[in-house]
Every structure is written in structure tokens, then in C-alpha cells.
Length: 205
Image (cartoon, rainbow, N blue to C red):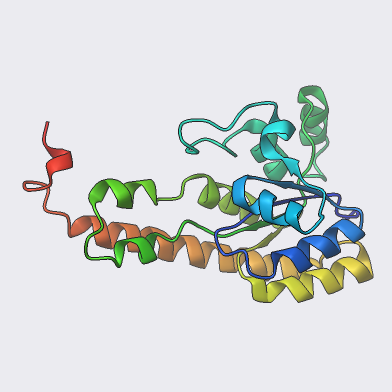
């Protein structure tokens, strides 16, 4: 496993991110980010490349499309030990993304408000986040994916010692991803099932 070169960080819960990202930067790891996460890191003097600059494609549709791009998902899903994957990455100008730190829009917090509307709930269903998480977790042999700030210290310790994380750590973190995304989808389904479609104004044609 080669040295980690690039991280993508996009967080709703930004606790501890300045310390984590600062240590990544000290290790020479390029950091990609979006929106408020990028702003917070820059406020702490951390160099960040916007995902839009990395992909060459702007954020659009009120933020619904930011990271849904082949340069992101190709960088996450390509197997580094597969010569054909490597060839296709070179052919299409894809660069590997080795570390992903993502957490999701706070859907459950949003719908906990009794006044929450269906439209507001829908806009707080994260699409890009779970997609990046699942891509990264599927390719755990090559990608370290973090959904819990409590895992930052171990990831940093292994990066400092080995230049990358261990396979066992990457597998453990991947399992946490699928647990999280499964619970996230369940929360969305549970809430949507409570919507009275016959009396919901936004569902009237």
C-alpha cells in the first residue's frame, strides 16, 4: 500500500476537523473539500482545493450536485492493484483519493422538529455524502473512510507510522460506514411513511 496522497473532507459535524486536517496537511496530503468545511479549514490556515476545481465542474442545483462526478468516484472506486483500472485512470485524467472524511446532513435532527415540512425533510436527505461513503467503503482495500471524529487519532497515528492506514483499520471503518448509511436510510423511510400523502399540500398535483 502506497503513501496516502489525497483526502476529501466534507462534514456536517466539523468537530475536531481543524486539528485532523492540519495534521494531514503536515504530512503532505492534499485536501479537497466543499462549502462550509473548506471555509472552516481555510480560517485555520489549512490549504484546501475546492472539489469544483478538482473536477472542473461547478457546484450546482442549490448544492444538490457537488461531488457526484467521475473524477471523485473514479478516484474512490479505482483499484490501485488492477492494471486496467490504473490504465483507465491515466487515460481519463483521474487521480486517486485515499482518505475520505464525511458525515451526513442531519436528517433526524431536522425532522425532530414537529413543524418540519415534507419539502424541508426532502432537502435534508443527503445524496452525495452516502454515495461517497459507500464508494469508499466498497474500496476499503485502497481507501480510508471516516464517519466518526473519534477515529481521527488512530488514522493519524497510522499515517504517521506507515504513510497509510492498515488494512484492518480500513476494513473496520468500512463496516462503520455501512452501519451508518443503513441507519440513515431507515430513518428516512420511517419518517416518510408517516407522511399523509392525501393531505400533504406539496403532494397535490
